[in-house]
Length: 575
Ligand code: PEP
Ligand code: MG
Image 1: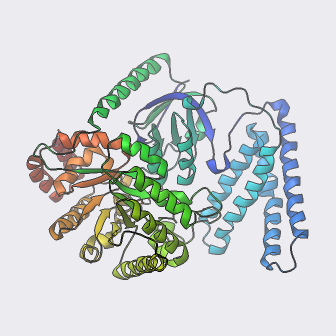
Image 2: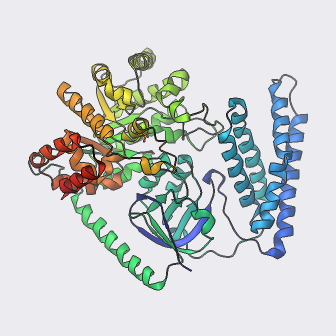
Image 3: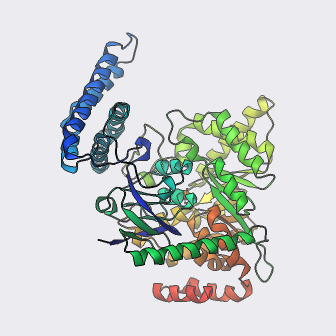
């Protein structure tokens, strides 16, 4: 029987394909049903993996060198304790039998549930044991992957027909999908501007988040429709719905093709005001999309993605190669590279979010300033790459004058280190700051006075202004870019920068929302940076806009405080 579910649309378009249930991609776990007759064998396989890992850890204990730190023994003991605890040694067996699923899947389901429990723990020491649990499960998983198990029947079709169905995925998981060609991807959790959703958008496939119970309700291989524009999925659709959505899918494709004609058109309004449309990227490979969509620069390179899904951190040389590649492939167009915004929902392997509220904790520039060696390595890599093109450095989450001073101090130090070694770099490299904390928006003159350019990060600005965790699906319905406080803050930043002649861009998800293009232009914004896939539609809107006509309407919108009235005014603005 057909089933319809509603979530938050993340990336438009229509996908029709077969469900593939997945868990955290880092562990690459697939789900399949094990026939009743083979359950006993699956249980034996799981027990054998436990025995192997137990033996591995015991063996390691006998090999500890005499001069090793004492913690090493304690660490192995802890891992053995975790392994032997019934939550890992028994609970997955119950899941295998009850759900008739493969051992890897049962282990992953149990891990997810344990991690959820860890997140609720107040005690910092205990919460940090989360990383140990993950490491033990990874050991078990490795052994299970190496063991022959039940082989699931051939799945219908190839990767391009698969719709990934997940309970939750981290941004690090989703970035791995860039190497694949899935038809679509949906999750139970997440908000519209969570980094998971942002990366999903850059995959340019229909996707939906906050579906709540989708993964529980959908079975492996079921036929599904995903309408990424409306945020609707239909599981096991009837022939009529299927025919209708195939038609809509075709129309969507035609629209996309038509937009491609605008690639080389200059972005200017009907009254000849030129607008700079740049692109956001996560990895150097994204440059192909940037060029294909005619962006006039990279407005935001989220470098933290170079640091995810790996056990060692990228060193200065590796980073330098990545930044130089982007700068070179942009052939003289400006490239704004943000120093890593790690922490909160983007953690490097082996570390877990610390602090009771990671979004308010040691994240972005705050983390960089506590890790000077790692920060200096990135700054040197950026400076070295600046010799090969037009590179600007962007600092995330700045909040105060002392932070700016400390940051600029590190940049000066990195410059001096290169000078001492006669390594060339752009001596006049521009340094900008993201305005994404309300305090920074309100004290904008501090930032105007001390930095070369600014960029508004509306994803975080909204999160912090409205006190809504951008990753939390239970409050995602409250996330509102049109809240009068948000609009007034954004307008205030733009006005102050324009008055001071300070270059100002906007690189949050608002930049790629075509419904908001006129509003932002009306505020005086002239530079927007967005996912490459959004760029041509936004350009089309710019080409259809006469600024003179919209500025008075936008002024009235800033004074409106009734949300319904505001939405009606926005509709009129876009008519
Ligand atoms: C933002 O906060 O708007 C932004 C562009 O940065 P990120 O989404 O990576 O936090
Ligand atoms: Mg941000």
